[in-house]
Image (cartoon, rainbow, N blue to C red; front, top):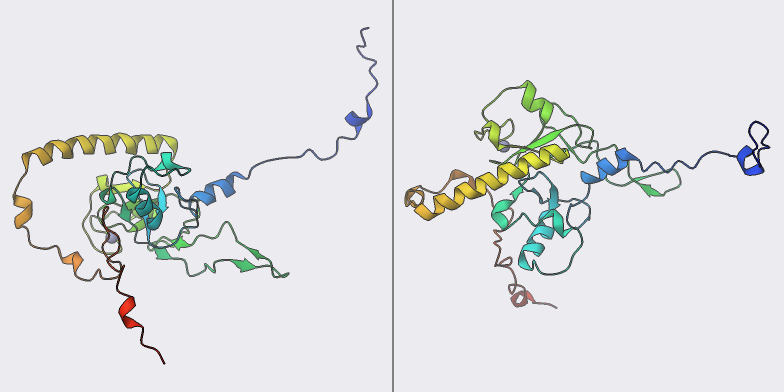
Length: 241
Ligand SMILES: [Zn+2]
């Protein structure tokens, strides 16, 4: 039977109520990229590193991955381009003085303000919370807002004074297109270094030690194969009462 025009609305059509808007908050999703390690999904905490594609990781997670690449882990596709410790760079981040970590509501529940970033741009003070573009310099690992790098033209790092070029700037958590570009750049670079290595230039060896290695005593050097050199130093100091 045709019922054009004269349909009687059924009850569920009348009482629609508020539509359940399951809007996965895009902001929250974006903000998460700036808060959690792209590999382990744990909260980012120093030392934080980035790769040639501008993702953020906890250094521990990457080291663990490099020590045993075959172990099964989720998100491993995020790091398959990392071949060794040389493919990551420890970031030199600037703390946000406003950041209080987990805050408490009036009830005492813990919550986090997703719009508050842990870090800021040391030049213009923008928060690194996903709302603004941020970049790091592959030369020194210092992190700045895109705005700072664009507005204040410089050839030396705003933070540590190391010289850098435009090509050393890597956008953090960039768009798909940007990541694609970074990928192409990375692959190009890898082909180049391969051909360079085969020439085996001895010039590199004669260069005296770089000045930066002097002050850098905070983090013990870790290489791909080795663990931290602390493993059996604890036993001797067990004098007690
Ligand atoms: Zn720097």
